[in-house]
Length: 254
Ligand SMILES: NC(=O)c1ccc[n+]([C@@H]2O[C@H](COP(=O)([O-])OP(=O)(O)OC[C@H]3O[C@@H](n4cnc5c(N)ncnc54)[C@H](O)[C@@H]3O)[C@@H](O)[C@H]2O)c1
Image (cartoon, rainbow, N blue to C red; front, side, top):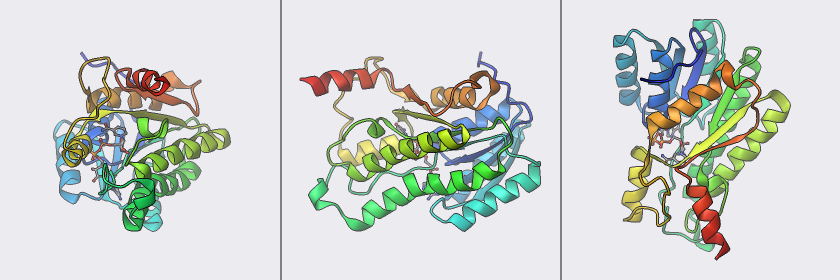
């Protein structure tokens, strides 16, 4: 049986809602009575998720939004507030991996790929926070997706790593200004599968819990961070990675 979260009638905005962790988060929150406003660049994926939520009796509004475009993000948040009357929280989960992942060292970085990755993964989160914070109800929570890459250095993955470090810095700063939350993890989703395809292999670190995480497991953490049960947590980095970080730290000491 799934845990329950006190999200009934809360209005939650979610980016990356068409796939992976965003999709699982939207479905979980909607199944527990939240009104979800999902945004993504994938029109078909968004439509499919919205139909699934509606057929299950949930309340959902979907909008095609490119988080790199501030005007699109601002319109989406204004429309969410006009439609549902408030904004109780957000999960900023839209993200991409660089096209040159596992290929280029720092001295070889491709300008276009760097810009694409940083624009979506870091500047996109800034656009979301800038639109969401002034519209957020008292006591609202905002969860931003960082990564294990935001806590260490990852060879041949500089743009993603730098962007995710940036997400943590941005979130910690915003938390000191407005009380927000943060999370990160390593999970089996379309992004992870694409990254493995490009690399030609799974990451070489061991996951002490000997399996990949599921999007639904991260959705549970996000739901907890968004509900009142986590009201005394703010500006924290929540680790959900099958204990991989501990393993990485041990490796780094060798
Ligand atoms: N899966 C993992 O192992 C893992 C690990 C650490 C961090 N993360 C982070 O979690 C978040 C979700 O990842 P996921 O694994 O569910 O990936 P995913 O690829 O399944 O989903 C990402 C979604 O973001 C959307 N998106 C991409 N660019 C966008 C843009 N410009 N504007 C709006 N939407 C856009 C995509 O269309 C997609 O639906 C990402 O920020 C990712 O970096 C994932």
